[in-house]
Image 1 (cartoon, one colour):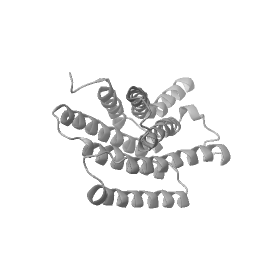
Image 2 (cartoon, helix red, strand yellow):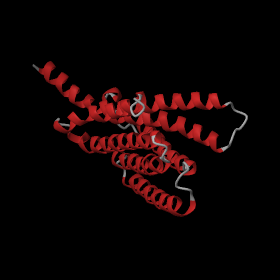
Image 3 (tube, one colour):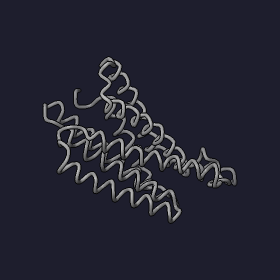
Image 4 (cartoon, helix red, strand yellow):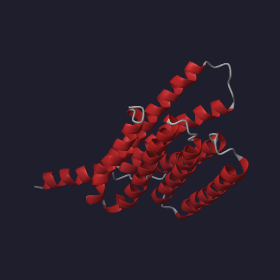
Length: 226
């Protein structure tokens, strides 16, 4: 089927994997999971709607601009606002969210063509997200966050790691496109885009599965105590 391909099927799978977690005890991770599920639901709708419009010859870039460029960026920044609990850091992230949202409204309605991809906004949002990821890793290394915990059992560590990988790669990809490197062969761009999609689906699958870690951890601890 043209409508369903490996890319959007895998993204929807990540979203579906996350649904049972609503019925499990997540404790302190409950709010994080709700935000991550919102991202998965948003991107599933964006990808399926965009694909539906695309195969019918209807311009779908405005859908990707609203969902992928602006709303997903704001949701990920909100995720980091929850994760990075320092008051000053939260204020900086909130300020970044407000400024990015205002820029997005102005850019979408007044400056940019709605039927072209907003590369400048995407790279700006990516930079904000990458900065949040770097600060998270900085806090782990230099501020001894989670010192008494195994990082490999923390959902937020896996989610942040794969956000960092994906957005670092996509940032470089879209910056390169913005430089209009005409000398590069189209087939190379296509291959790079395919690799970026692989990074993307891995990230969304991690989103869908990461918050099972504390649930399995509790089960293991209970079994050992018995």
